Length: 97
Image (cartoon, rainbow, N blue to C red; front, side, top):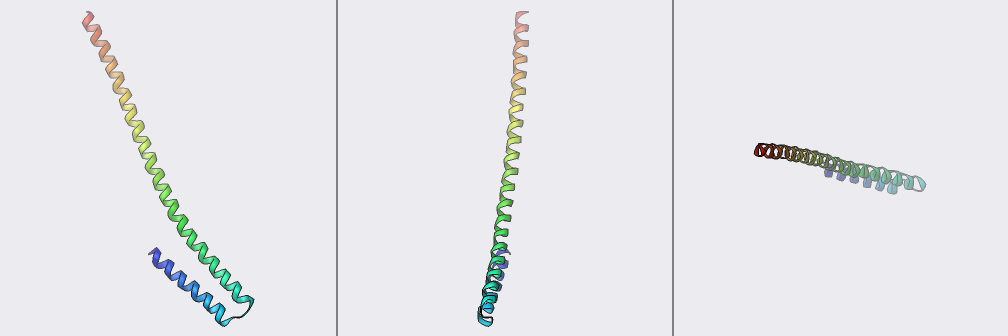
């Protein structure tokens, strides 16, 4: 869909520039071509920036999920280690008696 829109806008921009140079002579043709080219460039850059921002945001969410999962697994490991220590102390106390 985006490719179609880009192709359509490029055709419209080129046809507008052709019209400006073919039927209007002098400064208005140059000004019109400059305005059409500038608008087309701004539109293309907005599409590119939007897609890049979308990718960056999805990557940031993925990294955040991974960090939460790693923090959760490290806390589980700490809990298990403390349980093992408690059981070892209880075993030592039971063996002494």
